[in-house]
Length: 82
Image (tube, rainbow, N blue to C red; front, side, top):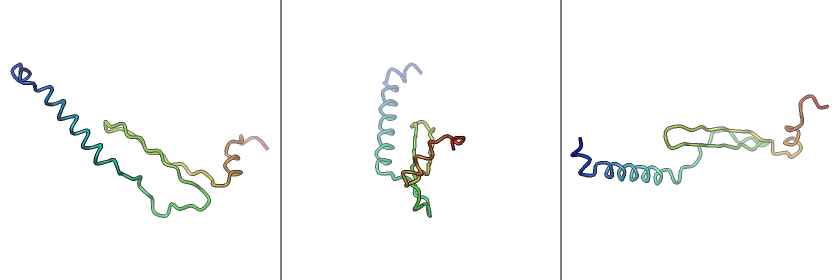
C-alpha cells in the first residue's frame, strides 16, 4: 500500500472525483423541474422548492398559494380571529 501512495494515488483519485462532479454538474445544468399533468389550477400558483445536497440527500416541497391577494392575506389571519 505505501508504494501506491508514492506513485500519487491520492492526487489521481482527487482529480477523478473532481472530474466526475464536473460531469454531473454539466449534465444537470439544463434540468427543468418536473411538471405534473393537470396541475394548472386557475385559482392558485404552484411553488416548488427543490434542494439536493449533492451527496444523495435532499427534498422537494410543493406549495399552493392563492392568486387572489385577499385570499392570500387571509392565510395569515389566526383561525380564532373573527
